[in-house]
Length: 149
Image (cartoon, rainbow, N blue to C red; front, side, top):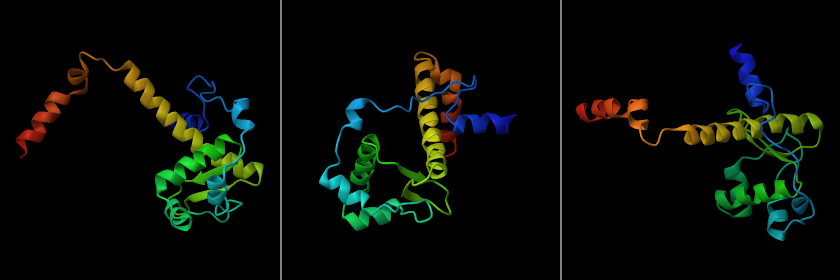
């Protein structure tokens, strides 16, 4: 049962089987054209998941810091470029999906990331503003930290 629930969460489904993420782009983004800077980054992203490029390598190739490249990748995705990434430690990197199978594989990673962000939002939303220290055992844990020094 745990494995099934984990797979459902990675696929972007809540425990009730509802979609957590709306995947339709607003019309505003679909009508946007790429900038020259975005095109300069995209030209180094391989087509097909068989030949991925890591963020450090891509940043070096375009002579930009990783935050700038991440921002460009995000903006390009919003404009309709099917950029995906693999977070598999042995085979990580960015690629432009060329088949539905590649897109589906890349979307698993994005949906997993979105679900982790949503979990954080729900946790902070539901956290007790008055009792979080007591409810989480913070004070006891802090005593352990200070007594071990």
